Image (cartoon, rainbow, N blue to C red):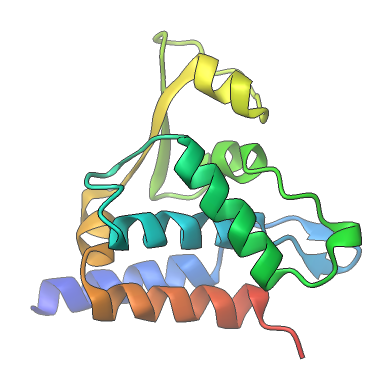
Length: 150
C-alpha cells in the first residue's frame, strides 16, 4: 500500500508540473485534456494496458473534454496530435515507433498513426489509473491545475 501511495504522490506531482506551452498568456490545455481522455477510457475498460492507441475513441473523448473544459474556443483548436506527440517530453509517456530508429516530429493524427504503433505509459501509472480513488485524485489535479476557470 505504501508503494502505491508513494507512486500516486509521484504521478500527482508529475501531472501538476506538465511541460506545457503558453497560448495568449494561458497554459495550453492539450496535455491535461489528453490525460483526462486516457483516464476516462481506462475507467470504461476501453484501455486495458499501458499501451495507448491513438484510437477514434481517444480522439472523440479528447474533443469532448475540450468542449467541456475550454470555454474560449476562439483561441484553442483541439488537435489531439499535438499532445499525443509532445507528451514524450514527460517521463511517464513514451512513443513506440513502427520502424526502429524512425521517430519523426509529427503531430497530425494520420502521421502519428503512420509512424507510431502506440504511446506507452509507465506500468505503475496504469495500475494507479485502474483504481477509482487514485484516478479521481489525478483527474482533480489536472482540472484544478490547468482547466479551472473563474
